[in-house]
Image (tube, rainbow, N blue to C red; front, side, top):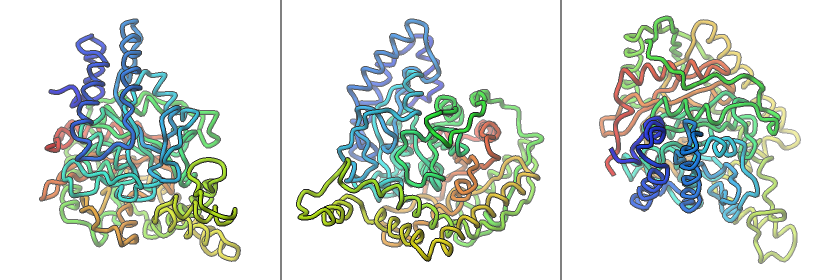
Length: 486
């Protein structure tokens, strides 16, 4: 096995016992990036010199007997998480040359753990999209088929993990932006409970929905990354002061006693690809063979999740993105003759089509005379969705569903049809609306060889339950061990 193919826990064992150094591991990952980045296009910025410096510091720490599960591990970071001294573009022209003067709280945690950052990875502009086609920088390709999208908005993170261009990655999830690309690229991705991971230093898209989370090669690595980034942060007013369990304490004890909820609203929808239905059905069979009890639950307001989400998220985006006006930082159009013209030209040139569409939608929904009809009504629907989950979790521990209706589609296939694109996240949006944790794990492949993911959702702050269920499923299958040919 080549060094860049290692999982985090495999690399940790070799680093701890002195069989490899972090410099060797990081060099292997950087060489891998040089080799296949022209094909995959996962990275916006490769911070090779910084990575080698951090690797040398990690080797010194290990030699001194200071090692954590993330010490010396090369990671990639989604390019909307602020990194001191390394540009953070949000895949947008308006922040193309922005270099943050501070680190996000999750980056500080990773640095304290001794992790190595090899670069910043591509995404849909300001995390708005389901395919990474909305990046103003480049279009990332799916490592399993370079003619297909990797999912979005954390498409660069998922592609980099799947293609062994890093050992793990951080993404963000506003409506499925970790789970959907994880499913399309055949890796593990987790959206934590809202408030479990600090959002300080995460460039905001929709503040009441955004969460930072890990993408990894297997469940154990996902748990290790969760240990690395979770915890209360006084810099984030939405961070919850609640004890964090050791997520990596996974046990292969089967699923006896675990009640898995199956929602008809998720499994009997029109438009689900037969390959997805087959793979998820087989996964349910595996869960039952492991001892789990599958029970029927109802989430009746799921039907309205997409509509409510696409009022709430654009509304919050229109407010958050108002700060990019060309006055304080970022891109400014230099040819304007007046202040108003400068605002207009800066935002027209700085933002892409999808971002402008959502700003207009959100501004309209929040405008005088329409607030009650749209934002207030959507917020009421959100409350009903949250109540659905509360009721469902009275009869089950975990809810199981597809992650996406279809495997990864071809680049450009849905680019001119935003409504169809929005439906790519139909199974993932509700977890963000309710603030509950969700994750995607590989559960099969389509007839033409594309990965299919399985979604698990749990009660607030029950990430450990999700990880244990996923770990037992993973130990009983081999989907996570398969690699794309690159």
